[in-house]
Image (cartoon, rainbow, N blue to C red; front, side):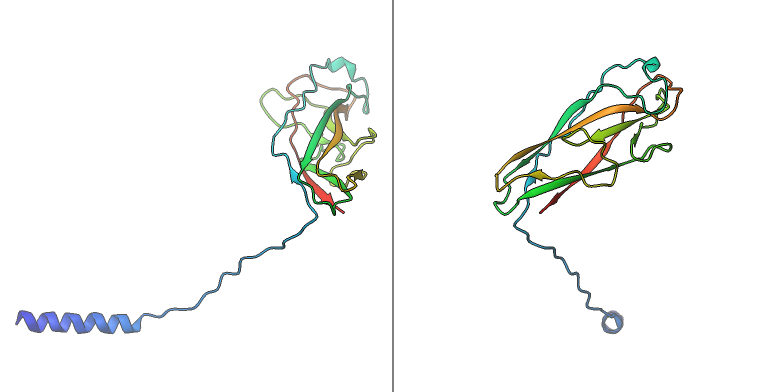
Length: 171
């Protein structure tokens, strides 16, 4: 009797296995191999704009002193002749060319952070910088500048930190 139940159970399980259905699914993984790039130094950096008095900003457009910062490129292909950099981040509501100050409990208001290229020309968010010539060099240091810029005539004191990301474009 036990053998009959065991055989019946085994046949039932075999029938269930046959009713299972499998689909073939493909996962395509790929990319593009390019030879005209550089390795961007992966060091995050803090650009210290320092302590600036709120009363230094009397009207929209008033600015703090510029602070330089760099982006380092290494192991560049000899075919790279020049590069541009495009910055992005949370834009200021009043002046979308500037980075907005990160929100927080004690955040300054009425200003944003401006980024400038090597010739200290304002670099609006989302726009490529002027070209930086590499001329086949294997490494390069790209010079930029940052400063606070008032977006209103009334700047309130507090923490004024902004976060930017960037993309390096090669030619």
